[in-house]
Amino acid sequence: MNHNSVIDRYCVMGNPVEHSKSPWIHARFAQLTGQALHYGKRLVPLHGFAASLRDFIDSSDGAAKGCNVTVPFKFEAFALAQHVSERAALAGAANTLSFSSSGIHADNTDGAGLVRDIELNAGVKLAGKRLLLLGAGGAAAGVLGPLLHTGLTQITVANRTLFKAQQLVQRHAALATNGTLVACTLADVQGRFDVVVNATSTSLSGENLALPANLLQRGALAYDMMYGPAAQGFLDWARALGAEPRDGLGMLVEQAAEAFFIWRGVRPPSAQVLQELRAL
Image (cartoon, rainbow, N blue to C red):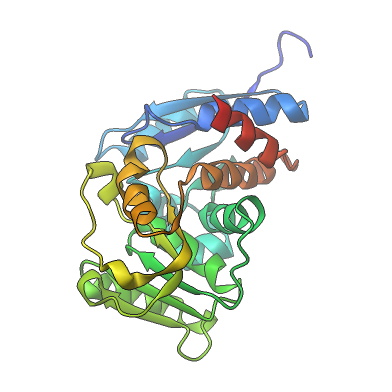
């Protein structure tokens, strides 16, 4: 590589973003696959996403090739794109943007990342199981489509406000066979589930979800999309009820691997990188 060549630039944009492991993950992916790139992080003012994105693209002399988008800008990222993938269109939200001469391309790798982590890394096959999805915001929207493709017999979307849960369910109705997809409020959750996925922002604010103890089958998988201290409350609750707790670190690595594949055309060794990240 000559010294005049420009290194492709990527970043993660969000608020908060300082805790993000994405720069480490993508740097490691690049190392292991022999790709030359730079991946940073950008803290975005709450009402400044469009301007921050424009600044990242314009200030890099064509080196900016893409970015990951995290809380709370996934809906806005989707709305700013000129081209959207099927996954992003279904979610109405984007976590992976690519830049080309024809504009901004939006995709959503969250669902693929979640399913890969549950099925490959945690070894839990979802076909035939009942799943409770907590929340109806951007995180839930990003994973519902791919979850519906796994052969789950039932998915219940539970949210504080019923309307948001119903909206999300209606948008995915075409993917659901009879009775597999229902909406309710958190207070009205009924039944027992083999898998519970926490896609609410309660983890970030340290709140606890008031959920009935009899929701979980014995040995159920209780999955928080957050990782680190943010996931601890939910995981402790699940562990106390005899469930298998799992944080979202594997989802983070797997959605990153999917984004890396979109950008670079190479699939990185995600299981190895997850193992290394857990050991840090």
